[in-house]
Length: 55
Image 1 (tube, helix red, strand yellow):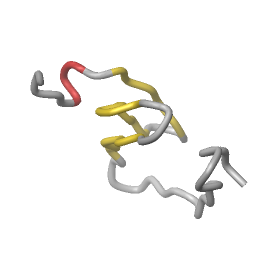
Image 2 (tube, rainbow, N blue to C red):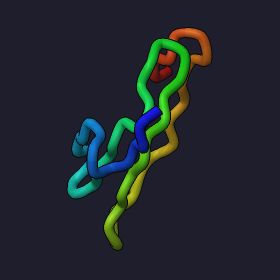
Image 3 (cartoon, rainbow, N blue to C red):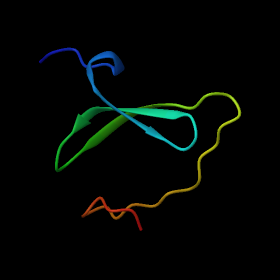
């Protein structure tokens, strides 16, 4: 299996200046690395365990 990192993964932005990388993305699991620069914040998020959809 190849080594996976933020350097070779799908990137997306969220919030004002935050970044995320999908290290593993399948129908059964999702592993995301995120970067939050100083001064940024996130809100509490809840997801349905079966569908993976945000509640």
